[in-house]
Length: 286
Image (tube, rainbow, N blue to C red):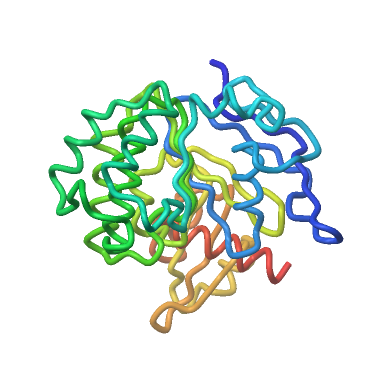
């Protein structure tokens, strides 16, 4: 199966800053992949390279194309929602639909109108008259109406309230995603989207620290809430991170089985959010 995205030794410098340092990862078709990292980790630079918005060193293929050299062709199959509004504030909703219909051959205006009919957005409204949540809904309507193979989302619900965030992701999964399409997204609100993800890529300081299908995480990682009299024994098994939780010690292990840890305390499968924090903190103290 040909990957949707394949990066090998991908690097990017901004002056003396190494934003990406030889990263390699693969995104398969029909997956929802979370590219997760702290501020300054290299997420946005990676997305810019994938979208053909910046040059790079190394190898990168997106839908079989070099995104920087073949961007015009690539954009027929790729859609993007940024963390900031990109629509002109003076434009009317109907004019935004007119524009996309005129420039994108795979835009289905009827589908966009059907989606907007379920919202409070009116066709004659100007973008400046819409709330931030409505602008995000308008972006989503334009995207949903394009028959694209890859959707890239960069903090798409940043600054929205919980209701709009939930509606956005529900619509994305129920009305857009299918086994033929692929979604790559970044977000700081990991807890809200981890149940949607099929794969995760953790990035920090320009390096990939974890790349895995979500279903494989339980086989690789174990969180142990240690009994107070077993802390020393648990530390002998070399956890890669530990923290205090309500007066008890939580330890994170990679490559240890639940069977060998069970006598030492309570065993849990770490959430993606907890695993992310553990990986980032462990890297910071290494």
